[in-house]
Image (cartoon, rainbow, N blue to C red; front, side, top):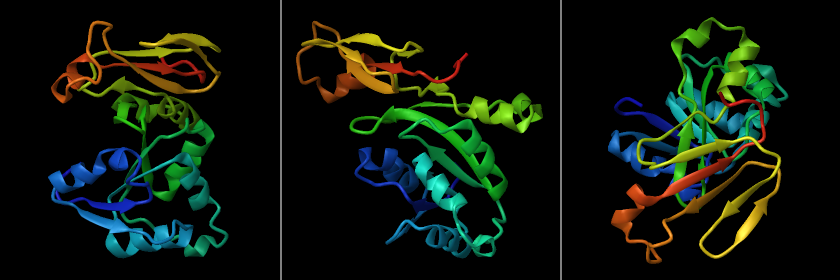
Length: 210
């Protein structure tokens, strides 16, 4: 993200303060564009009128944009809108459909209640030469961790036991996150210790992440 971005809010700020973009946009001297209703026409209108450069959303917003009944109501997007998507694993086929409309999507993964994005699919230039369906499959992966995480595990099992401070549980076969601190730590953790001590475990049941 460069300086003075124009950010369109289709994501709830209550989701870990808008996946931390409430602070990020302010830090980059950006402009926040808010919507009263998250409809395809309002999103396209805002992008065209205000020259939106960035937005975040769950994959369901892609369906809203694609289901616009009147294609003529989809204004041509002059420059790509950078989108971070998360909240649910985006199907590769959906990512393939949204790209021609003018949206450049980055798939992120995190913990809505606590951290915002924790993993992001860092795109490699050499992947631009691959077929579109292969690009979409790569983009649907979790990716690599952000710099502030001490440790990340990406695991592909139908069921996996996750140990916590007080109990052991078996996570159901869908993507899930858990946070674990060292057993010797006092609880709650001091704010200054969270960045260096937190461990993020990611359970993923989609295609290979390697």
